[in-house]
Length: 251
Image (cartoon, rainbow, N blue to C red):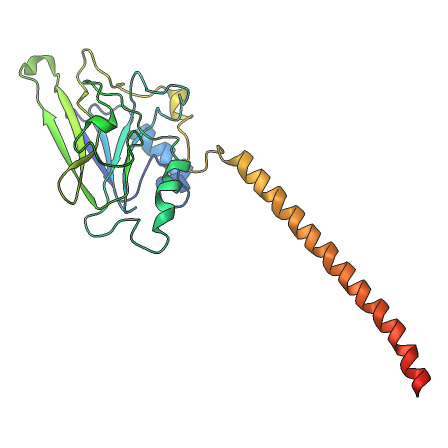
C-alpha cells in the first residue's frame, strides 16, 4: 500500500473476483479474499491478472455492487483472466456446458466502462461470438498496452488497455482504453469500505430461487416414489395371503 508506482499489475494463479463456484478461486476463501482486496484496494493503476480456468474473462468488483446499471458509469478493481494457449473449456466432453455456466455466474462481469466507450462487439473481429458478454471460451492469450502521459509532472499515466487474443491473434475481449490518471478518470482510486464488504462472493445467492424450486421438485418426486413403492409392497402381500390358503386346500 506504500508503493509509489503508477501501475500495479497483480498476478494470481486463480481468479479473484469470479462468482462461479464451479472453478477454484479466491471466492472459496471469503475472509482471505476480503483481506486481499482491502490490501490492494488503494494501489493506483491496479489490474488483476489471473488464469487456470481454460477460458478468458473480464471482471469488475463494482459490477455486482450496482447490478441495475446496464453499463457502469465508472469501474472499480478490474480483473482479466486469460487461459490458455493449449486447452480451452470447450474441449472436454462437458464442453457444451462451459458457456451456459459462465452466463449463469456473470454477477461480477465487466460491463464496458472505457474511455473510448467501446462495446465488446466493436473490438477486433466482428464475427466473434459472445458479443457483450465479456468472456471467451476458445484458446487465448492476453496483452497489456500502457500509453504513458507526455507530461510526467501531472503523474497522469494516460491509459491502460488489456486485450485478450484468440489463438489466431484476433482481439476477442478488451477492457478498452481505461484512463487511470488523476484527472477525468473512469477509474476509482479505491472502493469505499461499504463497497468492499459488498463485493459479490463465489456463491452470491442469485440462483437461490431456482435452486429452491429444483429442490422442491426433487423432494416431491422422491416422496412420490416412496409412496408408490409402499403401495406396491402392500399389493404383493395381499396377493400372497390369498394364494397360501389355496395351496393348503390342494394339499
